[in-house]
Image (cartoon, rainbow, N blue to C red; front, side, top):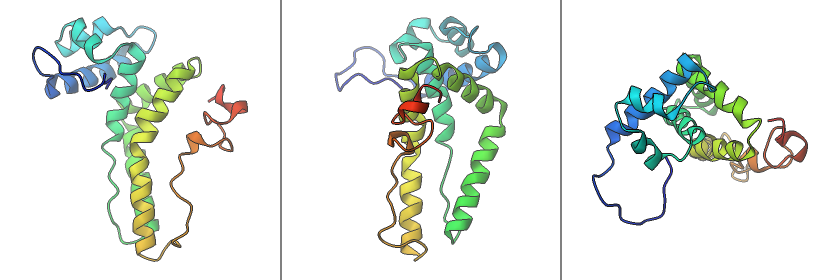
Length: 179
């Protein structure tokens, strides 16, 4: 969600229930309408909130949709399965199940397609989705090192999106425009 410094807000505090309803309504509307027909007004009506409520939280449709997708990836958990291989297999299973859900698949495809035309959106996706899951890589690496499955000097959890040698990354000038 968009945050604007540490300034105290006046009025009613934000409602976690309203936020959840808005994000769910966004995903549902995206599945039914597609990116091009999705509007902030439609999301507000489906969520049962005023359009101004949306704009206080998200300044644009793309911000709203990215957050609606990102929150789904927050469901991922790195469970200790006893080995690096089992941990990775479990994570791949969780990701597969998440991507099999129509709301995830449609929302992710829509936002990725739109990001091909919008470099700022690509960065927002990287921060909101990839960046928020970095802790899983760090946790898995640390756990595997503690079990002796990875050497102590194994490479860190460098985010591929930051590296120039990763195809499709923001750092790769050749493919960043095609990501």
